[in-house]
Image (cartoon, rainbow over all chains, first blue to last red; front, side, top):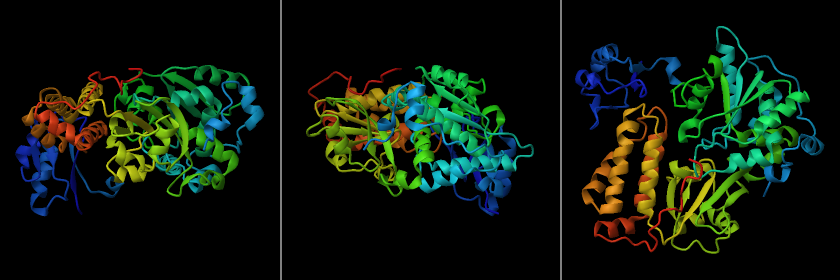
Length: 71
Length: 412
């Protein structure tokens, strides 16, 4: 299963936790909003990615890769 | 090549019925099913005239799929989008003036074809509500047609913003997909007013007729708003694929000279007039050229004007029109507007460096395409006005005219 990080840009308020937990895939722009690597999340980072999704204070981050998300 | 404008019979319902007859209604399908009109629209290759140019039949099918896939099957809703938030566009208001009944016919026919029982037409003014009331009094339509006047803002016509407003919220993008969850939570077909007018003619004259104008990949005609530094601004109808130069000529421009053409509006792109003249008004060709057809906007900026100052003013306006919901919109757009002002008014080289860096961080990072459109406009201006950029950096402006009124928003 190839999962990619997706951000709900309207919900995101730039807390920046995702970039702390997953610096390999998320960096922040000069205003603190995430710039996300659009490639599939490598297996080695899957755990950290799940943590970042779970801990986002705005629930704005998710892992998309299910059949429903492909549309 | 005029079709909509040739078929326009004005506000009078009797005149409309005399010329066109009643809409060729075939009886509503059940929610989740598709009527034969959808196949005709697919064969016609109709694409949305609001700026997205998405195949209309696919939108209709997506609504039906969403209805069929829902746990509880509820009739979908049809929304006519005549918000026309793009300041340089006047074609929807014009169309509603000259052919309101074609637009309403198309919406009602579309509703019937997807099993919708309710049409909401969203406008910013005008008299469409009177037309709808007359049709209601005379029992013309088998579905409920409601006309609502919405706020005049750039983003009011963005699909999810429009649905959010109809549902009682602010007219700001929500990120929801209307064909899944739209008006009242129901799957909703949102399409531009002009799209529905074309659909009304396709229902009467067929796909083959529709395809006899325009290009194979974008058939039919399109309404175009021509403005800026042209002798005769206004709304024209042309076959999709007509070269930009021909449209300018029709607006009284003998030779566009050394100016620039803004295609697609404030979320579109500048091309030098020389590059633009031969390019066809076709959504795919313009997209591949880094521009956009948008809702059919062709605006000429005379060479005497400063393209950088004009674009800076537009960029600031776009920043103010943002929904202020996402980081790139709240912070990115005002920042690039300031950078461009620094270049345009102060010849600031560091502002230009910042601008290049920041422009790359806007696309794809908002809840809607507002940052993308603004970034495209500014990037296109830096290319189209590159000699002006060089001049400004050395402290000069090449413009003979310092007033910045060519591409003024009309109604905002």
